[in-house]
Amino acid sequence: MNFSSARQYFYQEIQRPDECINLAKAALYIAQEEYPNLDPEEYLNALDTMAVELQERLPSSRYPLRLIQTINQYLYEDLGFSGNETDYYNPRNSFLNDVIERRQGIPITLALVYLEVARRIDFPMVGVGMPGHFLIRPDIPDIEIFVDAFNSGEVIFAQDCQKRLEQIYQQPVTLRPEFFAVVSHRQFLARMLTNLKYIYLKQQDLKRSLAVVERILLLFPDVAIELRDRGLLYYQLHRYPQAIEDFQGYLAKVPDAEDAVMIRRLLAKLGKDA
Image 1 (cartoon, rainbow, N blue to C red):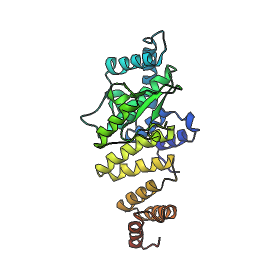
Image 2: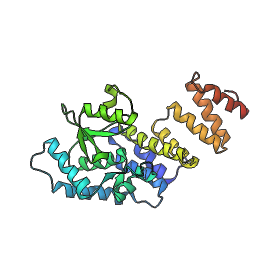
Image 3: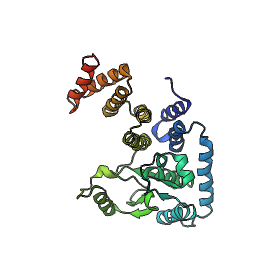
Image 4: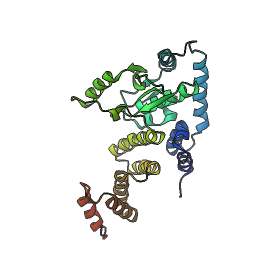
């Protein structure tokens, strides 16, 4: 594969078993495509330093709520991390190096900082892929609390999650068990990339959108919608042979897709049969 060095490092990292993927490293390799001179070790060291400083503040009692309170005090009050509400769709909110430097981010990148620091002090936490708003929670049986890293580490419960979803979607929402499912490391990275994808699409930045979709497909090669979207980006960038290949692959996976007629028309326009 003819990848940039950053893409090669990302690809190598995600070849590990899921639980062995270093999320911070992989996230920094994502950022490295935007910042070619980025040194991942600098930011990994910054996370290590945070953990060392936090370790000195830990209470003697390691009760989860006390630990969360201490982490919150350190990250949000001492260091000044916060959710970037005024410029939410700035791509920099999705790059871990920027989040560490600027102390601002979106739910998933602030969650990543929180998870990485918590992991370094031996307080296991996991990501929860709630629709519209990423959360984390202690990876401890029978403790049903969630932490909202975007809102200063606020501790919330399931009923609070419902209210939050109703605020986001402006309509009644029925909670479903899958809303609280723990995300794998690959799913975590794909969600980070998906955020970037929609930011770049909104900006009509086709080349960066394509680079993001390519990495999502490295994580999950069989996702038909991403294959279609890569084909559409290839088409818009006049890379027609690659577009044809992706369109044909998409239709082979989902021949009865709602947009199959449109994709077949594009193939016909390119002089190819579906």
